[in-house]
Length: 180
Image 1 (tube, one colour):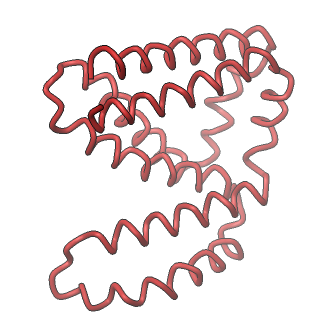
Image 2: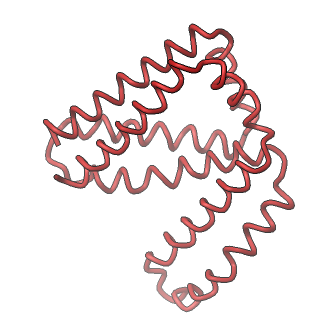
Image 3: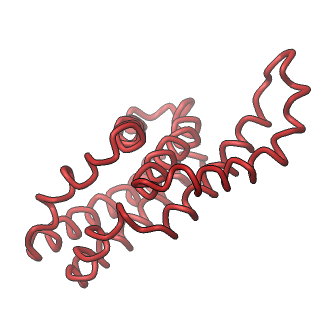
């Protein structure tokens, strides 16, 4: 299996799981999405994941004369996590989700880069959409409610969105096994 096939398979499994959960328990999804922007602990956990992942990503880069500063990331990352939890508490969950969307897109694009299939553009477009949404959530987190409000107003809309997400997941799994 190629790296893109593994990536599409993992994304497909996650999409099917999340889609089926939304289709089967729309009330829980509506409540969770409504409370998410002001949630404290999900924001802190996502911030910690973002900071650790970003620190790891920086350690893998070639920075020329700044390579000597990489050793300081081991103590700077926990300090940044603590400072972020203290001073970025306003809509931290949405901002951290935006950062996670930005970080996840990188490995997806690397997996799709050298795949010869034209269907790699499905995953590439999805990753670039995540980048745009991640930037919006990071810079203007109040857009999370504006974007999600129409989708969670009624239970049938949540169910329909869950079924649609599950179908996309099955499509990604099919691409992983038969195309990539």
